[in-house]
Length: 404
Image 1 (spheres, rainbow, N blue to C red):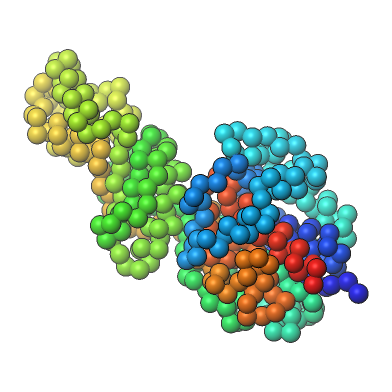
Image 2 (image 1 turned 45 degrees about the vertical axis):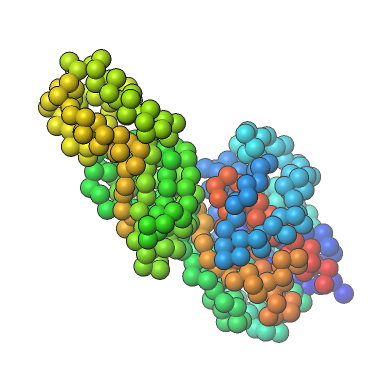
């Protein structure tokens, strides 16, 4: 008799789990509450689907137990992931460690997985809302009841709710006794207190972004900073945002220090500006940073440094030069909130990984219940790491559930 596997959620990890469970000989049903499977997968990598990454930084994954992810990633590696998709007929391409389908289309990945699921006889039931999972592994839906031998809960998080991630999986897990660590937006923009952002909106510039919580350094990252009319965005902001969200949720004071010329030490920058003052004293003060920074951002910084834009460069005082150096190297901004879940790529928080076996992905509380993907308290940095988590956790859960 075949193992009857029910998978709740037809996102990346749920589809991967379905393939691996069916390949183990199980009879698999995937239940999805939206009208189509894999909707969120289509938006990954700006629609190009950054399948994985050849590099694995030491702090690529976060959570209350950040080490939980690594046994799972070792059980189904990046190399195995690439072989998995090649076996589905996808030609891969790599750019600076980032791995994509050669078509540059996320739809290619989704379609290949759906072709394989159909070939394996996996049943996908869409527009099917799961209302309860009973401890005997009966799944109650708005379309009736179905009992499984094993259940894989791959219902996603609360990030990007328009794609179907509505947080309903948390309630299902909670009712079965699992602890849910408060879900918060991650890989998301930060909203700032200062009013000058509107003047510099649209500027993109290289920066070192350092997050401070109650005055202590919590995280930092360097890359292209994007200034919006409400605050800051871009990859380095996304990378630190989960720590900002957590600190704000705990009532801590959250600030960011922006180093807008990270390649230049303080002393070298001061020397550079004093030399520019000597050479370009005849220019209007508002042009002091011409050729150094984007002009919109330069005007904001000159004002922050107390330099009157109507004066001449030669009239700028040594004190004002030092103030400008500080603004360029250590511009402080107060974080008042993150953007909401609808702007977040993933969530921090979720099912407490202390209650899940990292070897099998099985619940330590309910025999026969497995977890995979974003529903767990594991979130990765930008660059294909969250999809790799989906593949590794989904396939691991599918293999062990399918074997029975």
